[in-house]
Length: 372
Image (cartoon, rainbow, N blue to C red; front, side):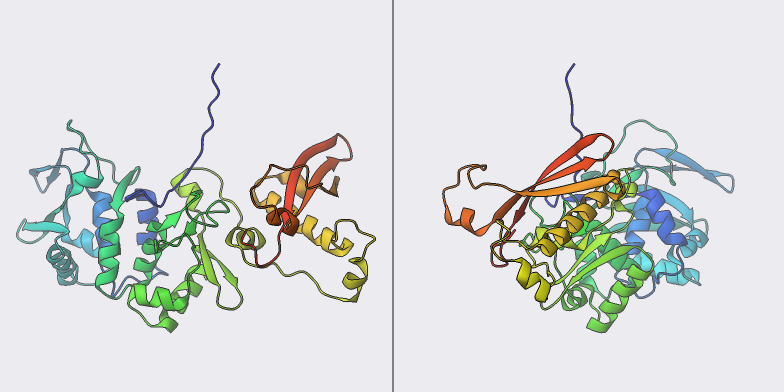
């Protein structure tokens, strides 16, 4: 029987982002995030979440209406609820703004009580189904064009809700083109560098707000557990990881993001303790050139990383570790031999007191100037 391996990815080259309707409903219901004064990304995404994939029929006040793919019909009062506006004219002004941006068209029906809108270019991002049937509005997903989202973001000032969607749409997972994406779903603003590190200044310019406001957005989203912020000292910047992204997008368990793992993926120095005991232990007694205290710290950090990646046994008190130096001969041949001299390689064996050795890992230590 053939064996298959399922690999989940959210790659940076994909021109569309899959958005689940349940996620949009959660955003609509979350009153702790403000929507006012936005660029229109949140409003456009809400309208897209209700659009049809196939032709259906809706009866309102005794009249049957035909709704084609990319369209939807609703009461203006429903728009007010979705957009969180107090008055109907405010909801209609949002529709006019999106129509001026050439993203939708809309028509008022029923003496101004109903609105029928159409997402322009719907078939370019979403498949149109030929048969007629009712369309679910609270389950399933739709695709949102990343280029359209970026255009809306660049038009005006972003609200807190626009910022949430911008981070969500620009998240990458398990793509070798983006550093740190294997450790978890990371926000990458597609700047061509492959590095997800960003700062408040870059976010402020992107969202059309001040640096202080961008910082307030990020701190609030972190407090609400929408994101995990991995910050590094100096001018490195921060990496933004989304919480509950994997469970929403792929229906799999979310993973914990370990700062040390992210630092290794991005080539950022991991600080080791520097005290008198360390200096005395790093002499010729240890053939690897690494002190006993540093070895213990390395094992501890590797254990935390593997535990965060789903190896639950690494938190068991019965687990025992051994870190053994490997000879330079136990490696693949490389063109540049100077790289072999700079890095140190170890064999990490993990044993259980009851069942013997259970795992083997190879660990590489490289100096600060070499990018991992």
